[in-house]
Length: 443
Image 1 (cartoon, rainbow, N blue to C red):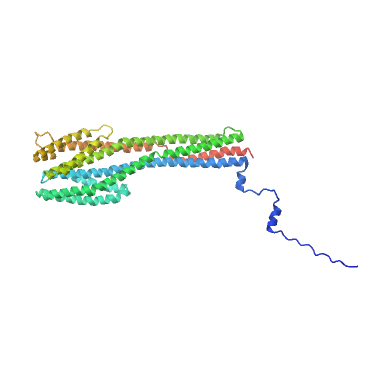
Image 2 (cartoon, rainbow, N blue to C red; image 1 turned 135 degrees about the vertical axis):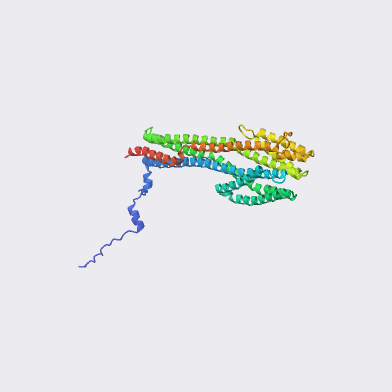
């Protein structure tokens, strides 16, 4: 009998990775979905998607509202600060031309000038120096130019003192020092001041323009949030047949009220700022320019007489400055006595020119320095002093009005700047609450 050989025992080996995966996943079975995808699956998932979207938009709305109010409030604060700096710089300008007018007019007297006039010169220069220091502290961007201005003023004062010393001794060289001092002021000092004025006017205009920009943050953010909330409510109503979701509706009312109250408050603040800009601020600029031009005209009146027959250039400069005064005074809003008082001074100046061109230089000088005989009814010093005092009072009133109006605009803003984000979070929580109620119905 033939013995058959038995077959070796069978051994098992694991399938290849590709084969193992194929064995575990049957044909036609969908691939497993991620946890996030499953969370947004079906109607409950879409509810969660609306929850995330609406809540996120609500928080963004709160941030937009806060940004809008912060922007407008900041613009109002900066407008007030920059206006104060502009007025400060213009006061420096006024003090410098005022001091120069005193120096040139006192030079006509010869010898020792009137003590009150000398004191006014000293006070004006001291006030200008103090304001330079204040302006440099208030606005770092102006420090370099103000430092250069200080240097030119040291030169100017030195030339004035040399002119005074020579004039007391009756030396003709004194008039040359006076002309050099005037040239230093006109060519070195005042261009720096004018550049500072221009820079600060641009800053003020930028901030006034920026006051109304906050409205767009509130209205655009509110509109987008309301649209998303409306779409959410409509979709929920169609899917769940519950036509009112109280928490989400309350959130929508909060967004609507915040948008309306905040938007109209910002509109009102923008209106106050515009009124201040077109009213007291414009009048402040006009008065400052008028006073600066008036002092410049006063200096040129004296320089024309000092030149004794060769002062045509100074007389033309007077005419140009007087024209600026006339133009600026007519831009002032509200009651003002400046125009009438300036016209009175103009009449006295016309008499000065009449006497000078008619060959009566001594009488012209007497009228220009306030030393004319009683029989002469013209007094240039008294007329100009009346204009100076009246315009200074008006300037103080107008500049204070700008600050008052801008502060009133700030005070009228509701505290949405710091409540904006909490409002947005509150609305987001209400949305989460409202949608959670509907999600509970699917469990």
